[in-house]
Length: 355
Image 1 (cartoon, rainbow, N blue to C red):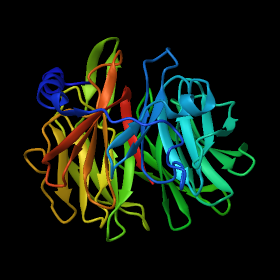
Image 2: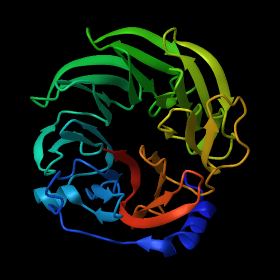
Image 3: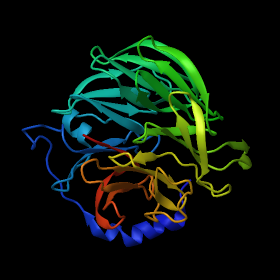
Image 4: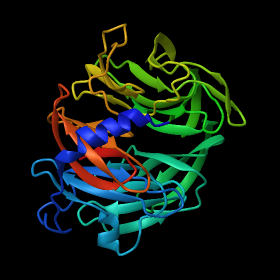
């Protein structure tokens, strides 16, 4: 759910500083599109106008609709996420039920993974193997041969699988509940592609990250039960700290209020893995990993649809989405939350990938 007052505040106080530097695709002849930031723009549901924007942090130049410009066709309907491994990018297009695979040097299409139901996130673990979460009720993880771009196996998991994380040889899958509810993490051995454990965590886990102590942080959006259009039951969203070797919960911190109509989706970590970032109804929060109390106020009090942390500088990239009928904005801040600039991107910007 979007907070209307925060959207209006962001539109009036930030968008006046928009930077619209543009360039034609193919200008970066030395490395193509291997180095920079990629913004995935969902587009408007059912309109097949999802896109990827390519941003160069050193010059603040942007190329919007990169896939369409290079390949001469639309990317598809609801661009959910993008993942990079070596010289390839895997773009998950949710409502088009596919994954577009492109060459990072040219952004030309290398092939398409099809036959999907509800694809969400992709993670490559080697130059030959990757995993894709799929399904909004009964979920599964698809094993992908990244060379042939083919599905080779299917592994059953919990409901509504979302983000993936590799820990040692194990793939951790956050089962978000999808259109229902779940409270588990599925553990898959990447050598055998078999489920080795199912861990209990908070209600509806959506995102995962590791800190400098190799402890696992899990963002849980909370349990939600609807009776028609009426909210019948709800629990607080939470941050759950877990031991990834034992699968045990070490700490649970409530980060949201019931009744705020906000269910967080995005989690991030500083490059040195000493602090965690998360979105809640008040904005973007930052918390050191050794804290046991959630900050009372956000670092940046604006609504973002998603965010990312630039590894080299620690700069914060917020994805501002005022509506799904007009372009959104990439809004940059220093690590202390001070504003840098804003750049127009595509419709419904939701994620950013740095490479």
